[in-house]
Amino acid sequence: MNEERHHEYEPQDVEPLPHEADTMNNQSTYPSRSDWRPKSEERVRHKPRTNIKPLLLGGVGGFLGAALFFLAMMLWDSPTSRFMTNELIRTEQAVTFTESDITTAVTGAKTSVVSITNIQRAFTSNSQWEAGAGSGVIYKVEDDTAYIVTNFHVIEQADEISIAFSDGQVATATVLGEDPLNDLAVAAVELPDNIEATPIVLGDSTTLQAGETVMAIGNPLGVFSNSVTRGIVSGVERTVPVDTNSDGLMDYNAEVIQTDAAINPGNSGGALINIRGELVGINSMKIAEASVEGVGFSIPVNVALPVIDMLERDGRVTRAQLGVTIQEVIAVPGNVREEYGISFDNEDGVFVEEITPGSPAEQAGLQVGDVIVKIGDREIKRYVDLRDALYRDATVGDTVTIEYTRRGERNETEATLTEAR
Image (cartoon, rainbow, N blue to C red; front, side, top):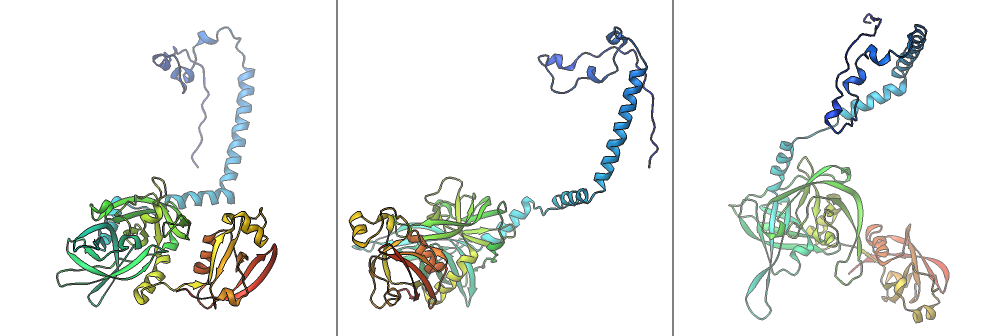
């Protein structure tokens, strides 16, 4: 320990320095030099000098200083202090990245992102036009065939799909399967000798955290191919109601990644990558079209992959069905409520309008006029809840418990789900 040295302070005759704040409207936030320089005898000459007060003050000050020093040493050596110190060290050792890391990630991934042109033909002539443009991601190359995932709305109603690779080479693609509900589609391109296709590295969207840096790569506005926008993950495991057929009724709660990286028309179907250049999401303007500026959505790659596999293999997605035509209770007219004994105070649940003959619903004993309020563990309040219960929670062949009301009485039954056609 360094030897402590103490000096007795004797007041000295020193002229006060001019107050520095005089040059700033005579106001000062911080102490000026005249506040801490030794005061001159002139400023204290009217006060009687005494040795008792300085001694008392010095003694009290020494005692307080020693006590504070002792307390600080105890706190420094306490478990809490050590924990806080370790926390600070962990914070300082957090993983960081540089601009070159971002450039490296983008450089490695953008060769796997393609531009897509939706070409349609007129019914009455042989003329054709570009009906739309978007982006796609090469997720697999096998036997000289590149497999590309994009959004359904990018290739919807297309008579021909043109693919432009990152090097400018162009080829025609064949659509293998479509899934409007998840806004996903898969296309394949037979690669000629002059085209090299590189599949993107697949990441894990379940490990994403809010605040993590991400980049969106695509063909914004159908003009600027291989454009990059940078942002952060604003939220994970978000669900957004989606109207897939533009009928004004929400069809499905899409699970999405929320980001502030710009996702524009033409950017749809492109890649959302992390700082390692791995694919973590498929951008979708369709899902984001009703959102506000600075809020974009991307389909998590872990949600997309099972759908991609089914589209590539079967050309469609297999989903379970109950076999009912329904309407939300909140929209049921008053005369229908009276007919089936539905309380006017009841706004939750789905009203069974029609039952398909031979369907799981019919075999379970459901009737027209019943109100389904729960399937399995999921409360059914709106149409999207029923879709989630059938498409997200269950698969074909599952037996589910259904709770429903009939003329105000709550009942329960079971149904074995079949494949939707």
